[in-house]
Length: 255
Image (tube, rainbow, N blue to C red; front, side, top):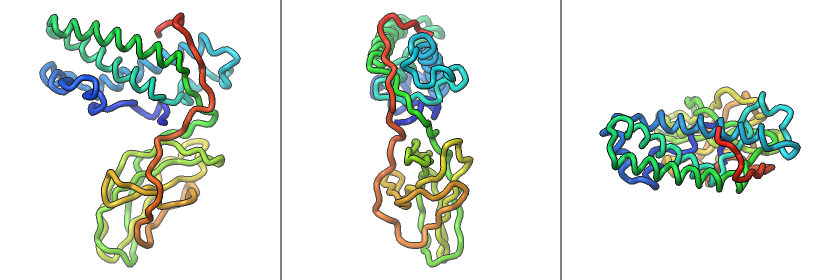
């Protein structure tokens, strides 16, 4: 699972699962869905931090550092992901209604306010997932080539950071490079985060069919060179799973 600080838990395609016409609404009302996804992430992050500060107590392993670390160790559970999507739609329709004062948009605002509130309650009751040693999502790697016995090929690549304990963060966004005959692919990760000691490389000739190319983690600061055929390794993961859950209740305040 990704961390809450890795970026928006959802994209516009995920919003369409709940509201098929949301792209048309956004286009008609000139609403930037990317910005609203980001705003919803910020608002949920503030809410989650308030919950942790107010109700975690001794159950939070980072309680003494919570104000300093914020939500950097919070995992996006399936319940939180749904909360984020519905809260984003609430924000979008709130803007649309403000623009037009259209009754149909007003109904949608109230609908998604209720659904978002319900999703929030479910997420909090399920528990806010925390990891003891968070490994952030990797930035897109730098791809290059070096001389070798390769053929012209377009490669799609993701990388992920790994800790000394084997914890693996969420993979980077996919990036691509076309090599020339007589060259081979070189993958260099960017900006290793604190706690990361190595990285893994996932690659393929299709963006939706990537496989692990590094059975063991490559030390941070080094590069990976694809000297032979692509390996048929595991697919990329989704990041870390929680080590601890902070359970809340219906009296938790909204931030």
